[in-house]
Length: 84
Image (cartoon, rainbow, N blue to C red; front, top):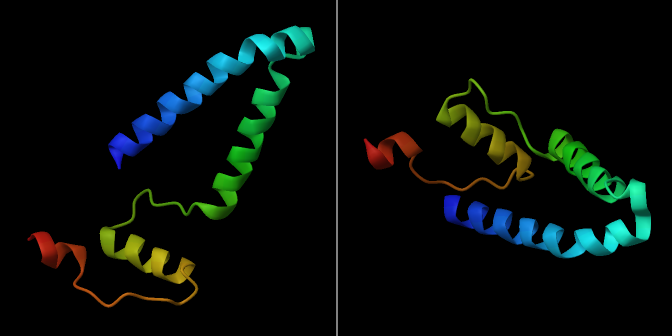
């Protein structure tokens, strides 16, 4: 997962680097508005669709994720039993 996240981050930075000169030429002093809009939309998406996991145990996170999947639960051993 970390590798995939790093790859996505590099691709996103590459896209910003490619598009910035064209956007700067077209929008001038408003260059950062499209980037601010994307950041705003991503923040709203995160607040709506990504559950908070801070301070939760692995079983609590698993229960939350199962509820999100519209009741489709997968029956398997808890994560603690797989590794410990």
